[in-house]
Image (cartoon, rainbow, N blue to C red; front, side):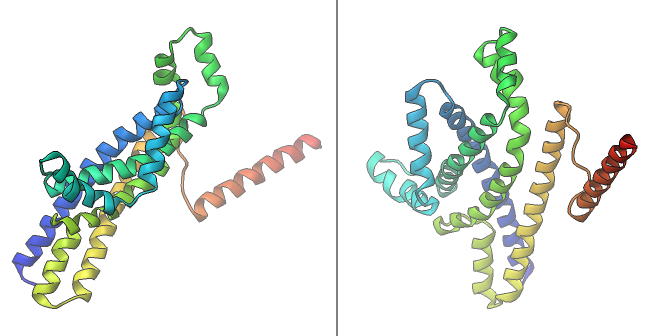
Amino acid sequence: MTAELWGLIFEGIWITVQLTFYSAALGAGVAFITGLARTSRFWILRFLSGFYVEVFRGTSALVLMFWLFFVVPLALGWQLVPMWAATLALGLSYGAYGSEIVRGGIAAVAPAQREAGIALSFTPWQRLRLVILPQAVPEMLPPFNNLLIELLKGTALAGLLGVGEISFEAQLARLATGESANIYLSILGMYFVLAFILTRGMRLLERRAKASIGQKPEKGGGIFRKLNIREETQQSSNIITAGGH
């Protein structure tokens, strides 16, 4: 591995980050629009959004990518560059999955909260903006985190269109050097680091979203969380026992 080949791989990291960001931005916009449409009182919006979700969730992102890059130009007469064809395919595909997260998060808000907004004479838009979304967004962030990690790994499909993301550049380096184990081990580590950074960022957003509505973030995780729960349960048992005496 020469400095030039490592430079190509690090350039591929930057392309992967850009592709993930653009696709996530498009997917998030599609997810919220479609998810809100699926909760609309108008049947036509529910039908169209449901049709979109079923079509894009039931088809392959790779095949959609090929359609946008190879077939659409034949029909429309203009060619998408590979980067934007991949972004559009990934954003539309993962946006369909994200719309179900949005719909589920909105449905999880207690009906009493909606009734409180009606009692305060809020308009439907005010109820959505001031009551429903602030409580639904913290519940959406953990599944959105998982979807974002899947999107990061899904960017490797763009290499089949010639987009120079990490996997594509790693393949070029492997062909140039004949080294497979070292190169692909390095790529695994790079994907892990990127996924770890995204996870930390999403968890920070989750804590801030919960703090904005007065929820305390969970402290600790894994075995420490279980020990905290066990300690709280023991304290509650002691209080109940003392009250009985």
